[in-house]
Image 1 (tube, rainbow, N blue to C red):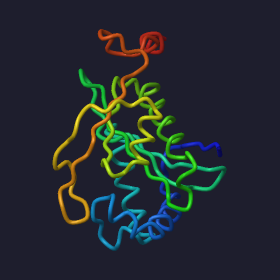
Image 2 (image 1 turned 135 degrees about the vertical axis):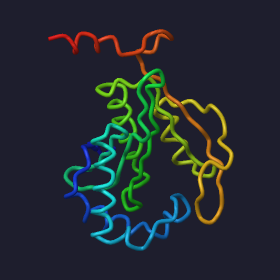
Image 3 (image 1 turned 90 degrees about the vertical axis):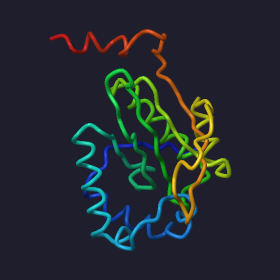
Image 4 (image 1 turned 120 degrees about the vertical axis):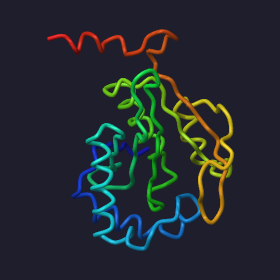
Length: 190
């Protein structure tokens, strides 16, 4: 299996992402929300990346790219970060079709979950996948996510509201009581 890495998204990734999205445009109509034509252009992708980076700067998400060697092959994100007593987020990932089927999404999801639990110190990561997307369900199950139910009419894709299976994974430090990872208090001290 090829080893991958993930790193934080930058505006410089925009043209590479635009190329990948253009190549997967027809395929993604069955899995992603409808996007305007401009999304698939270099300028449109730069605008989308800048909007994502604003969300990251405000602490509402962490967004990264998936690299196979130095080649950008997809994206991974921790969306809707909530602090306080929830301390959770929702995982998203996409590997461009020319690179799919080789375990890259499984590795990218694992690395993003590590970021969620440490350094972000979140308690739970949620993820959603359509039942007919067996590959995405496998990615989550291989990463220790548990199916917790079905979210009816969860997302509008390809002209209709779709149901999604909801998955969750709790932090390895979860003891049912602790609010933060055990080492968080020691990091906060001078």
